[in-house]
Amino acid sequence: MALKRFMTLPRHILEGEKAHPEATGELSSILLQLGLAAKLISLEVNKAGLANIIGFTGQENVHGEQVKKLDIFAHEMLIKAMDHGGHFCVMASEEEEDIIHLPPNKKIGKYVLLFDPLDGSSNIDANISIGTIFSIYKRISPGNGPGNLEDCLQQGYKQEVAGYIVYGSSTIFVYTAGHGVYGFTLDPAFGEFLLSHDNIRIPKSGRIYSLNEGNYFSWPKGLKDYIKYLQANYYNGKPYQARYVGSMVADIHRTLLYGGIFIYPGDRRNPKGKLRLCYECNPMAFIVEAAGGRATDGKERILDKKPESLHERSPIYIGSEDDVLLVEKFLRESREAY
Image 1 (cartoon, rainbow, N blue to C red):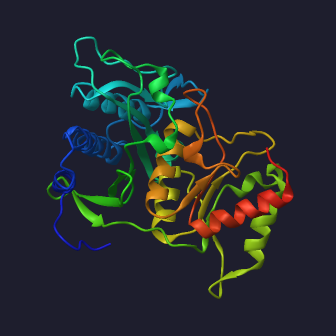
Image 2 (cartoon, rainbow, N blue to C red):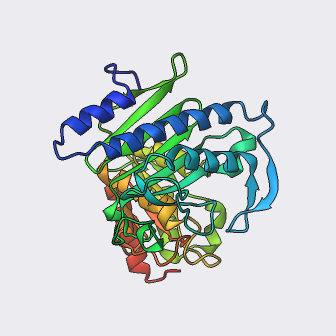
């Protein structure tokens, strides 16, 4: 999308702060630090092959998945970028089994940071778009000391800010504070994020559906019926299109801009799906809803779900409102779920 006006990410954040006289400036500072971390991660992603960063470390993460070198770099970079500003009381990462406490010599703040440092990392070696996902909450634990697990297990609607960064043919930083969704593209010429997607609104419906059809025979009947319906019908006179990257960040970004639906369901093998409620589903649902879309687990609004554990998984149906409502109808009528 062509630049409509010269607006950098820092300027946009500061102008947003001025529009809210009650703002303390802390969220602005957090977003600026996240922008810096995104630039550094983007730089490493773009030179990963040259820097011998791609490939496996030989270790497994908490989910039993092979950890890639770039995952660790992104994880450590985000912690280093965010742990010294005095804004957070606790952090949590998809790559860490437990919560991440701030260093003992650092100031403790009132915010909580949850992040997936490198979503879609199985695509790294194939040079397919990957990304970072983050969400910010206010602490709910009493006192001014370190935060705890309770601070990290909040319902998604309580997020203050959520966002993601796509590392692809260009690097794009997308965020929302609940009112408006904005995208910024990194200009490599002078190393700054420029506003390229102003006040993103997801179309009411779309032509694209995105899910891994290789799992078809494990799906609930309602989802099978929904996909058959799409394949047998037309959208504005044209067939529906299946598009699936395998990086949630990339698939959601396309859905946000073009409309349609992204689905990662529960199935016979994984009744709760495979995506993490705290690190992936909640921040993406917050963004898509702020853009006028809808996100559910097939029965319940994603943002209303109360996480029971840090790495809890959830099915997700997310995207254009009409498309999500339609798949929910098919799921209800089949009365079969996993």
